[in-house]
Image (cartoon, rainbow, N blue to C red; front, side):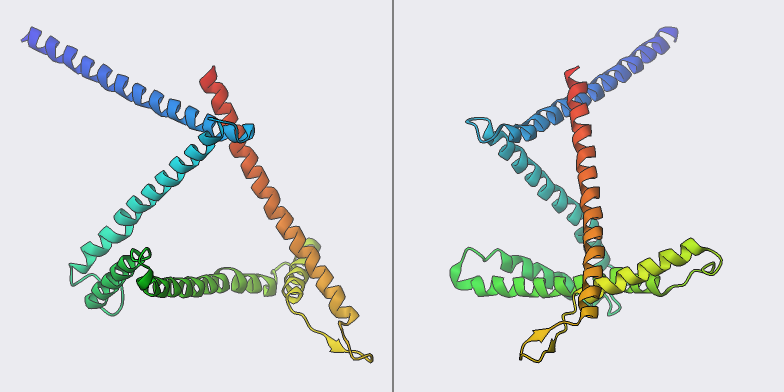
Length: 250
């Protein structure tokens, strides 16, 4: 009995060591692959040299291919598979029209996907272009609705909202005034209005030009802040990659 327990303990320890060893090997392999791909991306700095300039392209191709594969897997597991499971159950429905509408939507999407595969056939490109037109129109409509509900309407509500402590806090009053002027002048910048002058030409009023210049200042400031945040994010990623290279090299 004692020897059987000893054998079990030894076997469990060996299994644990093997699992730890395989996990460490996999971790080292991932680190090595990441190291090589990082060097391939940084080879872009060397220019289009023979046998070196192609390394960056290979790394980009690998990234694009893995991104497409990851998107496909996530779309299948997160959208297509749950949709197929739900349309098989009458009690569950993705729309208010019922299960039959879900089935029709699924087969319509499948038909659109098959029509996109007809792009190489020149005589049937009008079908593919029709699908593209539907996708572009629907995407533009969704983008407009998202911009209205997610950006413009909340911005207008925040502009029109008056803080409760506006009279007591001078800084809150100044912030509200700046937000109001910035929002209205930025929106007015995209409105071009002229009037006829005595010489038969067209000109803007001084008030209109001044308000447009104020809106331009606010727009440029916002774009500069966005650009600066993008630069900081890029520098953070670059710093992390460089430190990763030094860690692997050490």
